[in-house]
Amino acid sequence: MKEEIKNTASQHEVWASRRRFILGAAGGAVVGAGAVVVAQFWARKDMSARLFNPFRLADFALAAVPGLTRADGSATPGFSSADLAGRRSILNFWASWCPSCREEHELLVDLAARDLAPIYGADVKDEPEHARDFLARHGDPFRAVGADSHAYLQRALGARGVPATFVIAPGPTIEVSILGPLDREAIEEQIIPALTKTG
Image 1 (tube, rainbow, N blue to C red):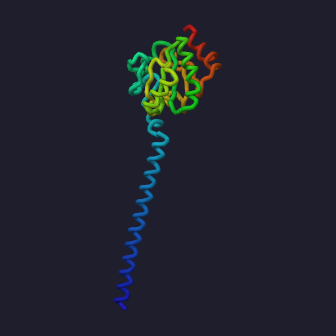
Image 2: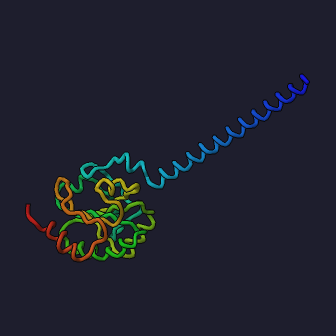
């Protein structure tokens, strides 16, 4: 009888041990899966860019898009807040993968030809080779093009996507913001008056 009790107790210990192992393994798997989900959510939503944005309009620097050149073969530079501080300029956020950017691009090329103000292009979350191909095919209206690889500058100015266009006044300060694609009406009624006004 004592032997039977002893065997039964031993079996209970084995089952309890197995149960602890299984529960521990399952718990570890759940924690691991949860960590993966959180990491994927963080990356997909780019939470670091939202919570820890190092850029402000008055303090930023965008590096040049690698390999991007002007018509004369010289390298197209990036730009910074200092480039926007001294005079009115246009800041356009775009990307080669953006259909609306392709639609509005001809308007930017036409606007650049009017030579009212320099146009700076912030290339958002784009591959350099795609950006180079886009400007080679559609024309390059930009004084300089900076790579906004994490959309830090875009978010600092309150734009949630591309395209977005701003008239930047000396300071630099935002004078006009167009969150979405440009059209001729917006150019003639908002951008041109802001660029040509005195004071």
